[in-house]
View 1 (tube, rainbow, N blue to C red):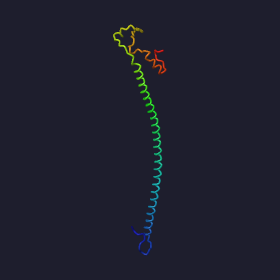
View 2 (view 1 turned 60 degrees about the horizontal axis):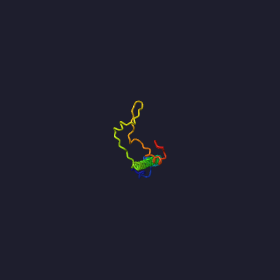
View 3 (view 1 turned 135 degrees about the vertical axis):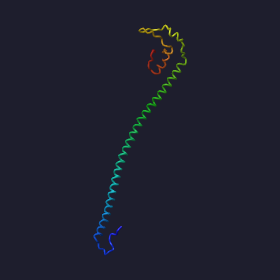
View 4 (view 1 turned 45 degrees about the vertical axis):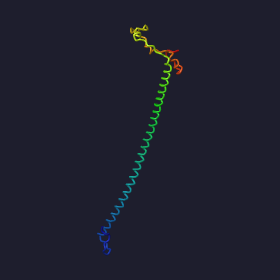
Length: 158
């Protein structure tokens, strides 16, 4: 770098004055650059803060939506689970009840040829119907105690 003032009798020549002006301009340019850089960094920080706030709000909204959806799904799960337990309980109770009621009941075996030639034939519009198989016939006494449990009438019972 060139010194600002020459060693000669401290008389400033136009060249020395120009060198001083250039040096001042360099200092001024550096100072303006630092100010601009500082301002840009500040604006960048502000924008980043606004963007961070925006995305924090979006993330919070997403979290709330997930929480609501999880509560709804948990409610559906609880309902389905309760239905499963109810179905298992009713199936077990019904199976236990039928096992208890059917212990003393024996189904008679009737040869198939007897069913085909049964005298209990009905004719409806030219078609011949036969009586139902014995295991399909309902015995009202089988359902009388079930009727008492449910309080609902059973078809074929009084």
